[in-house]
Length: 186
Image 1 (tube, one colour):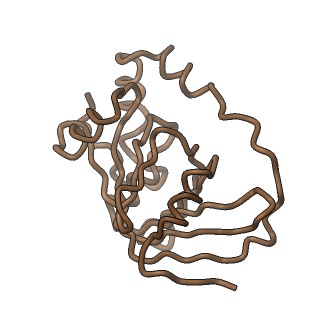
Image 2 (cartoon, helix red, strand yellow):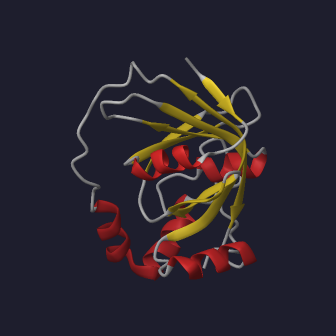
């Protein structure tokens, strides 16, 4: 049975912190645009700042759909699933904001993170709705490990290679919506 809460409770923050992966879904305004759903690792990059504010450090990636959709309309949902013996699905609906290099919010958060290689944006979500559902249909699976591939790829690219990659791959979404601001790509 699903439950709706007005904000994140400590119980749900603990659940989030134990999740090895979460999913982000966004969509453009137009009916012809592509809905985006992307998995993210639960690692150093995610933060739950309060019962109504969460976010993550967005690393360089092959696409820029989440950023483009948030810039266009702000709508977002994050989903956390239990793959353990106790089933649960937790969804956070809200309005997302994107902060890029040069923005005060970006600079202060990245400096608190302690490292910044590959961070192309900071995304925050003002949580408007917290809901749970049973999760009985989600399989029980064992978490083995996070992949080391992205870290190695970032290191191999280096700062100049990542700059070039962002310029070539992260300015527009697949629907042609504005992604990263070319003036803020460092």
